[in-house]
Amino acid sequence: MPARNRFAELHDEITEWRRDFHAHPELRFQEHRTAAKVAELLADFGCDEVVSGVGQTGVVGVIHGRARGSGKTIGFRADMDALPIPETTGLPHASKHPGVMHACGHDGHTAMLLGAAKYLAETRNFDGSVVLIFQPAEEGGGGARAMLDDGLLNRWGIQEVYGMHNWPSIPAGQFAVRDGPQMAATAFFDLTIKGQGGHAALPHKAVDTTVAAAHVVVALQTIAARNIDPLKTVVVSTCGLRSDSDTYNVIPDEINLRGTVRYFDPDVHDVVQKRLKEIAELTARAHGAEAHLHYSPRVPPTINSPEAAARAAEAAHKVSGHVIRDFDPVMPGEDFAEMLAERTGAYLFLGNGDSADLHNPSYEFNDELIPLGCSWYAEMAEQSMPLG
Image (cartoon, rainbow, N blue to C red):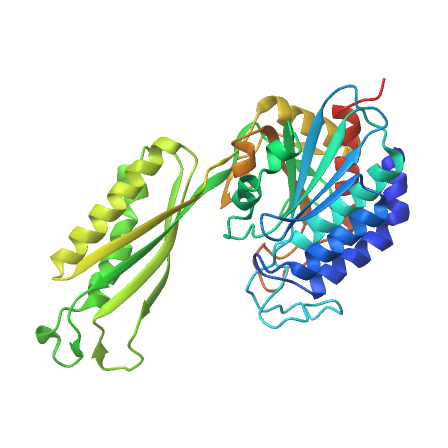
């Protein structure tokens, strides 16, 4: 396949881009160096249009095919931001920024889409236009929404939109895409438990917020276990507990809990939010304390249209010959869902092999995936908008 041959030639160059991004990670909406390099490369490739500052630090590139008679425009999206995680890989290209690393493979996603952009700008073997979307702040920052609010879809006339994410535990080089929900909706919550502080040796003179908070944490698990249809998937996780006390013998006035909710069915969401508030308030009250909830919905479920998923799977099969179609959706969230909520499209996984998990300090993107990922983008453009 011509795309594969070209990407084999470009492999070392694209790997250098990827490792440079990895060595210089930037947190959400701080991707200034990354965005500048992306924009510079797109201009060097000869893209017909390169626009920076979309959704704060996002970059958009446009490549027109040899013909534009189809009137079709499809978008490909890659994420650019890193995570606030200290890297432990010890690799030569490890992060040069203490406490920040590319622990989710966004460096690889950006590099693969750049590789595809170089090939598509060279060949232009399609009838229509490709819009290259380099998104900031995927990691909880609302980068997709920022680009949408900046007019991304309408400004460039995007009719379909596709994204790709590497996935550990899927064999390296195999693709996976399913119809319907592929990733979960997400919400965050903060709970403040207020009581009356005091001396730990005199608990009867205080309202113990720690005990109240401990009971709230346990009670919240009954939402999934007893309030939701067992055939529907919900996760309620309390992920942090903090107080202003740093001594061994003080009962704090206040305890702060934080956590996340994950689900697929929008009907479930209202029940979870209602029960989270009720359980927290009533459990705290049973211990003489008060609970105050701040609940923040983040992104909807990532839902692939069956037709777009079929097109993505067909292109993946031509590239690798290995496509998983029948698998369970996963509970992490992805703000690419915001784009899929407004345009037809699909999100697929590319197996990263036997690597550390995502968001792990020892995670590393598998550079051997680069030719396959680039080839998939090229195949999607040529297959979706064929010449002649």
